[in-house]
Image (cartoon, rainbow, N blue to C red):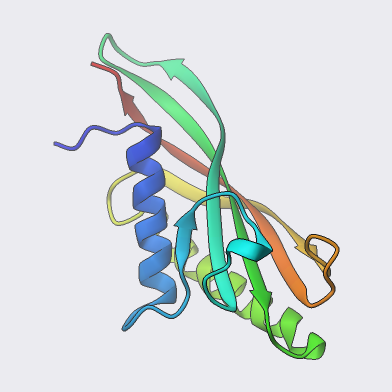
Length: 144
């Protein structure tokens, strides 16, 4: 049995998103890191970081948890007219697959996209566009 906590859930989410976007060889890096245009190792990158968690006591060894994760999908190095298409192409691929794989390959109880905000400019650079996605992951957190 795998221990489930914020770190293992975040790693599973990262791995699932990586599988979605890179079914063969890796072309879109999926990083657990703060989003930065300067740190982008490719023209299309997904960054994710934990946001917050809420807990409800279940038993003496675990809690019901809702873990919020923010994911940023950033695209650059393309004609401005193509950036929104690229960003929404990645976002819709991730969204549609997460709707089909709500348990992240059996690791959590439920994962859903709660909101998505489009940014026509990132870090005041009109040549970089992105989407900030809020995800909610429900699972049983083991604490012993």
